Picture 1 (cartoon, helix red, strand yellow):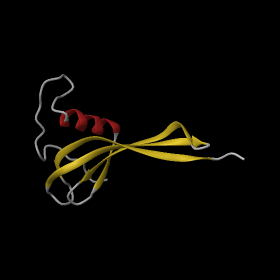
Picture 2 (cartoon, helix red, strand yellow):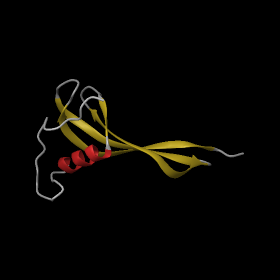
Picture 3 (cartoon, helix red, strand yellow):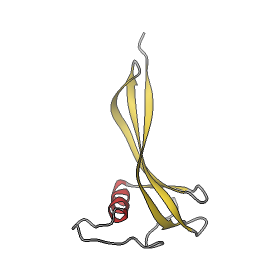
Length: 99
């Protein structure tokens, strides 16, 4: 008898202030990464799926992102760009489009 399945892990990468595409409020958005792993006898072995998303804390809208968009948001939300110069994220400066 072989027991196999999957397990998902949710990692919060950042909290960003963005203008929500649904409610239009400048609200905090959680940037999250979900990794699904294959399990064998309840032991996670390898990841088979990775997705990124933001979720509005005001209305709950969740929007999926690709890896490049998530990385760009994480870098700008941390207070710097790829070159290391400081940047201040502005509310509404960027928000992912509807999916």
